[in-house]
Image (cartoon, rainbow, N blue to C red; front, side, top):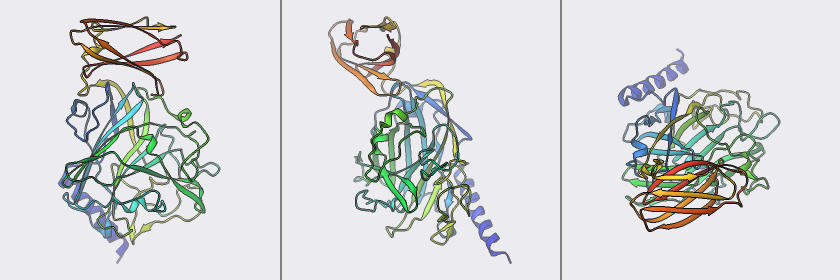
Length: 404
């Protein structure tokens, strides 16, 4: 009798049963990532209009990559799902992730844990290949490029029930080979982050900068002499990326990884799949088959496409009406002129971002009358295209200008 075949068949049936019971069928073949006009309030609540707009769908994290000892957990043990949009003014991806986990294993410390061992904790993991080039991404050795794709492992020490935390680290492997490898902290890629605990549910809300494969190799201390912003990608409609969301679900703080789930089907690996490092690859962990090649190859990532349509957030966009906010001229050499025709008075914040999403200028004004006029000197800015963001009374106008 072929016991290996029966074992695989049993695992397949268990996975199929879980899909039927939950109604999940993995993330969309291509996630249509809607464009957010304004960022949400990062508080761990999905009540922002941006997360409830048409076209912003929940995507499941329900594909079993590592079934612990051949078992699939119940929904009380683990369920996961996420939403994803993109924000042009600050050039960011925005995420909301909801995890149900009956035992949350935390306590990972980047400085004292090796820093290896992070997969043995409860971890939200993002796999991102910004140009969907596919291929290996573990080390930097010849044709292999560690930054061809990123495997972001987000570790958080959960707050008290009903509370939030903004403390986190993000781990990924770097180096030249297994004998010359290390882990770096990519927390700086996540400008906004919050995690909220509500019983057995954990809500992650965060933003992410996107970098390409020219990103410099990080050293053991996580620093580099190169300017990482030079590798930052300008997000634009129609952009296609390789993307998968995953979760390491550990139920005991015993130094072993238990279940592993992804948002796309896993592919069992038994060899290196073109990986150019040493032959030290594994096909089992803790005695179980591993259905995941994502950690070393971007070839099986899911697909995400940035859309043109815009969705709002709780920061209402009524000011975007050109009858209320006028910026002139559209091509500016020295002075940015702004007129706001709106009965509301109060503080006005004007921000200018370059197309890499970096804030290059910020002004604070007071609007005391129905019609507000201001002339701001931006002669110090370099030539190029800028995005202006004008905020009054939690309402925002986003418009582009050209600096001559």
